[in-house]
Image 1 (cartoon, helix red, strand yellow):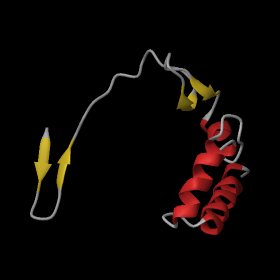
Image 2 (cartoon, rainbow, N blue to C red):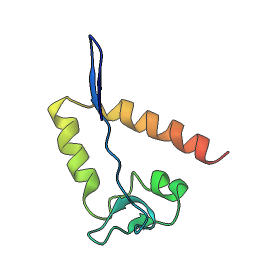
Image 3 (cartoon, one colour):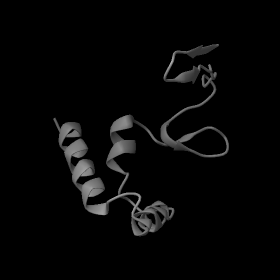
Amino acid sequence: MVWSNHYHSFICVTVDISASSGFGEWDTTGTGRNSSWHAAIGNTLDDDDGILERWRRTFSTGKLDEERYTALHHELQRYLDM
């Protein structure tokens, strides 16, 4: 289905994920690395597989501010801890 107005166009897609499990980044089998969204979000600053290194390259381009990203991450974690 495509919906549009004068300013925006949208394409809606439905994806069946019923065979997948876990949360966060998926592997090639469709299994998420984490057992909950809480864990997936809480682990976003872990660098088990080089994700932070890729983020650091993005920070170095100036397209994303590292200080702001870190502050927002800590704010998100504060809500997770409630």
